[in-house]
Amino acid sequence: MTRPRSRDLIQDWTPSRRRLLGLSALGAATVPFGIGAGPAGAVEPLRFGVIADCQYADVDTAGTRHYRESVHKLREAVAAFNDADLDFALHLGDFVDRFAESFADVVPTFEKLRMSKFHVLGNHDFQMPLGELLETLRMPAPYHHFRRNGWRFVVVDTNDISLYANPKGSEKYELARAMLDRLTAEGAVNAQTWNGAVGEEQLAWLRRVLDGARSRGERVVLNSHHPIYPKNVHNTWNDDELVDLVTSYDNVVAWFNGHNHHGNYGFAGGKHFVTFHGMVELDTNAYATVRVLEDRFEIDGYGREPDRIVPFGRPATELAATAG
Image (tube, rainbow, N blue to C red; front, side, top):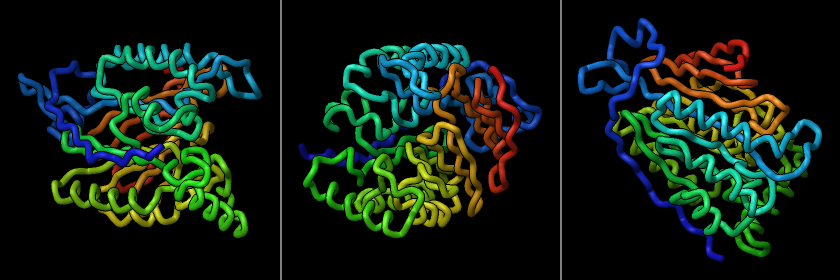
């Protein structure tokens, strides 16, 4: 089938009145960048939820992956996000592990979120043709972007050039085969069949989006399934190219991703690269909420996901993981 192209989806949002949750003295003192005021003038920070690698399947546990338990972990995260009255929630790919029917067990739970919700495509999600997958996850396109409170959130498709997301013999499949062969010959650690790359058409689109955000004075968070930094076996195939691109924009703040279930963090070119822990791992949960303040993110981790203070332009401080 023909692979759908991305639409330049932009969703503008006017903040509704939300209850104030744990505002710091700094946040309460001023109206910071990325924060709106409610009808009575109260300061309301932008807050959103992040889940990575739910990776559900109705199969027995294998090694450290508790596939069947992910549906219960997802239910817990959804309840926590709803209680927190967040602005939106984001799943960073690999919503299921295998079988097209697996989506029927987790999509209804995710749809119970009482907020805007977004998916990023992961390698395990390709259990059906792309068009059906986008419809199942209610995604407008494999890559798109949306706005909240002066921030631009960009959904990047790192499966664009890959062996699993494109029909055999297609142009993108052959390009993926050639790219993987080259990386394998070079001994690259990320020369893995379950990784992919961002293609030239999407790269051109991404530059336009980042240029547009910069011209509007918007700060940017990019979101993908595969990491790009630091070097890791899980990284997208053209990770160096992507790092060079995002670090060349002064309005880019962070790149969020999943795929590496053990989590990771890097800081380069003044940008944060945060890999969130995979929900499917072990018998403990992993998800997070992110609060956007004038000069930092505050990541509140649940279960195996650590808390982080993420100051803009300086390395993050990781705190101990908590039970939430």
